Length: 375
Image (cartoon, rainbow, N blue to C red):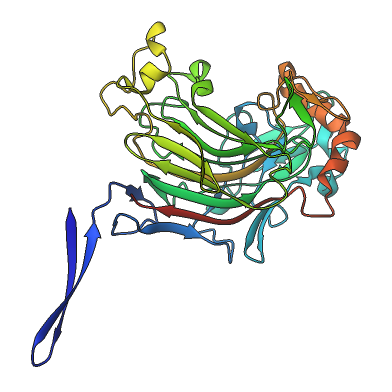
């Protein structure tokens, strides 16, 4: 469908200047969403000349993302800032601000008195915690930024130019979550992971480097949290030089028929669901669940608007495999330890902290730009 925008210039005669616009299949919402959509238009962009908090909301929580990650997400310019056109997300030590004893005896209460200071996720004791010797407070501060209020979209092309951090147990991510949970809570409404990596220099699983030499992209989906079959939709790529040595373009193309991931314009992987959609792809007919996507398109649950997330996590009890071998020292916690894992992690700081090179930018997750185009 072609929409024409015409402007008349009147003198002794009339000339019409008309601009063609191919109608877009993309939909958008939010305070920074464009009013008019044409196919191919750049519809969202941040080149980080400033830290625009009208675009990016900081998550503020101690919750640990459901797998007891070790960071405290906060809105602080020590942890998220812009310098020379680059967004930096930087991990820092809580003990540097409050002392080591605070971790096992202090209380953190992030229930703020103004909208910008409010705790954004109370789940998993996310707003208030008191440390003990057995389960210390989150020892790392970091940042998690999202466009949940400013921009979400359905179908389009996204590109983020970024450089991942170097440092054991750092977990950078660029990903997307559904704005409205169209099909119920995670993972029924989907999750799109454009980039994930591990900062470890030498972390090997079954002979494969899975640390900073590897990056991955994944779709998460399933009828409930115990049936997330992301292994069917997971892609990874290795580079012996390490993905931390320079900036790369991490790309997503999302249509009503397929979802594709690329790095530096090279295709990483494509998911094309069969006629039975993601229900058939995930083999969920073998379970007792009812198909939550049966009334919708075969790309469901990836047929609603998603918003963009950039964050730097640390540790946790899921992403760093128990079967991975780290050198020159072993992983200092067990995933089965649950909340106690953070204490074991902190006790081993003389092993992992030197790998962060905190006097440099090595441990920073750095982002040059974020761009989204309409289809």
